Length: 483
Ligand SMILES: [Zn+2]
Image (cartoon, rainbow, N blue to C red; front, side, top):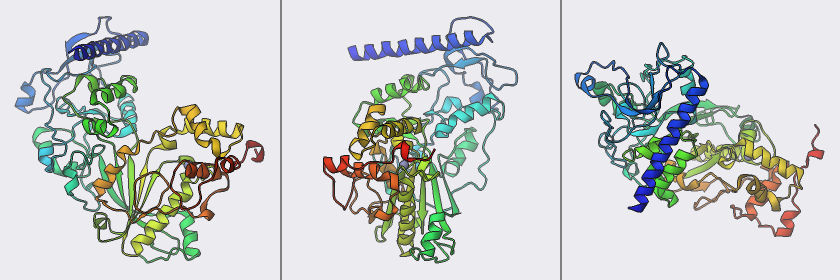
C-alpha cells in the first residue's frame, strides 16, 4: 500500500510539474489569452461527427491549460489537453487483446488524434516513429490540416504474408504490430462504421536495387545474373521490402528486459522530457508507439519461402551506420558487411533458398552519430588501439552498446523464420551457423574495430588475440590523413 501511495504521490507531483512547466512556457511566449492557473476543465473540441451516439457522448475532460496561438484557422483547440485518465467521461478505448490470433478480436492499434478517434485511442504515442515530430511540425506550420485522412486505395502489401501462428503469441511479438501491414484492410469495416482513423504500421513493396559493388561481383563472376533475382549484368537486384514502425506492447517489452512495467513506463515518461504523460496516467492502455526509428526487411527470392523450413535461409541483421553504409567511411566494416550480406542472400535465393537482410535504424549501436563521432575523436587523439576500442565508447556513453537485441527476434517471428542456415554476422545473436566477412572485404582503418569485437567475444572462425597482440593493432591517426 505504501508503494502505491508513493507512486500516486509521484504521479501527482509529475502532473503538477508538467502543468506548471506548460504554464511557464505559455507565459513566456506571451500569446496568453488569460493567466488562469491550469485546472481540470472540459475540453471544447467540436464534434464534426454526425453519428448520433458519438455526438451525444460527453466531451473529454482533462488537465488542461490555456493554449497559446490557438483557435482561428490553426486547427488547434483553445485548450491543451495535458493528459487523459481511464475513468474520464468520454474516454472509450478500443478493446485491445494483444496476442489474440484473430485480428478483429485482437483489435486495431488506435493512436490517432483525429477528432472522432481521440477518445477511442488504445495506444500512447504517435504514428511514424521519430517522424511523428515532423508530423507535429507540419500541423503547426499549416502544411497539413488536422482533418486530413489517408486514402489507402492501392496501398495494400505488394505480396501476401501470413497470417502465421506466432502472430497470436503475445510473448513472441511485443515490439511491432503483427497486423500492421493489413490494418487498412482488416479494420476497414470498423473504420467506416465508426469513422475512426486507423493506420498501417507496416508497408510491403517491391523494387529493383543497384549497388556499385554488385556490378563488380558480376564482373568478377561471383554473382551470376539469372534475369529474376539478379536481373542483369549491372548486378541489379529484384527485392521485396517490408518497412516496420515500432509498436510496443509494454507488459511484453518490460518482461523481455526483466523489469517492472511501471518502471519501464516511468523511465520512458521521464527520459523523453515528459512527452507522454499517458504512460503514467493511462495504466489501462498497454500499447506505446515510441518515437524511434523502425526497421526494413530486404527479401531476395520468394518471400513465401521465409517461413518454409524445408528451404535454406541466409540472414544478415544489420544495424544502421550511415557513415559507412551510405557514405563509405572506412573506419568500420559496416558497408562491406552489408554488401557481403546482400550478395550471399542473393546467392542463397538463386540456389532455391531465401536471402534476407534486416536493417535496423539503430545508428552507432543506438548511441547516435554525435556520440559515435565523439568516440572517434577520443580514439584518434589517443593511440586508437584495438585493446581500448570498447573502453573509448564506455568513457563517453557509459555503455558499450545500447541496441538491446532483446527485441530483435520479434521480426524473425513475424517473418516466420524458425531457423537460419547461414548467419552473415559477428554479432552475439544465438544462431547455428555464422559466416564471417572475408578478410579481403575489411577496409584499412577498420582493423581496430573488428579485432576489438572478436576479442570481446563476437563471432569468429579465426583466432582470438591476446591482450598484447590487441594493443598492437592500431588505426590511422589523424596525422596520417591528408586534411
Ligand atoms: Zn560502421
